[in-house]
Amino acid sequence: MQTRKDLMLNYNILDRNKICHVLNNINVKYNCNLCEENFLKENIFLEFSGNNFSQVFIFKVGEFNKLMEVLNGLKALRYFPYSAGMPIVVVHERENEAEPLIPFGYIMLKYCNNIFTIPDSKLGEKFTYGKEIVIVNKGKKYLPGYYLVVSPEGYFLGYARLNITRQNEVVVIPIRDIGWYLRKGR
Image (tube, rainbow, N blue to C red; front, side, top):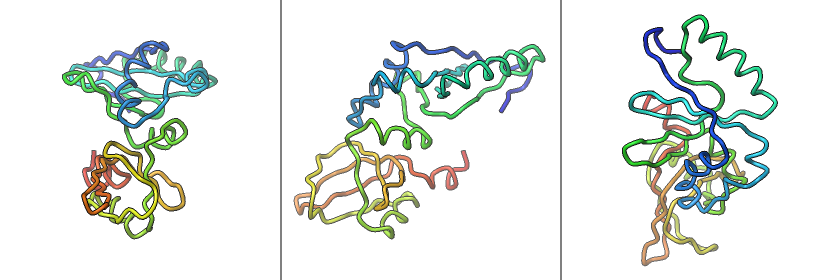
């Protein structure tokens, strides 16, 4: 994607310290280790920033030279892309907080501990419609907090906040799910 020729966006390669700083609140919220050495070694992180936003994109190390060739070629033609690669987080400058995007959830599953499996595919479908679901907790004890939500088959469905009621029910409140893009059109 590209912006108008007169709208200039900046892109920066994020080093280990900067990407870990960006991912810190996600690590804490979802009980993750996204600054794990292999994850950082295998990937390059590129931040595109404008006046009111910033997004981080991820690339495999082997794709980077081709990416820079394309970006520099577009820049020479006075085209300024606002995205490239797989978007993983949006950085909200005012709150100084990063929010994970849907494509990042599939990667986060390998590095995070707060994972909630929806026990029934019908409930999973309801969750992807952005609806709150309530499940009687018969097995694993969950703490209130933020979780990655997966289907019974282990497919990533979205991000949610879990509340636990006195009746031992788990209330799953969607934050962003795989149906969000279709509903919101963004």
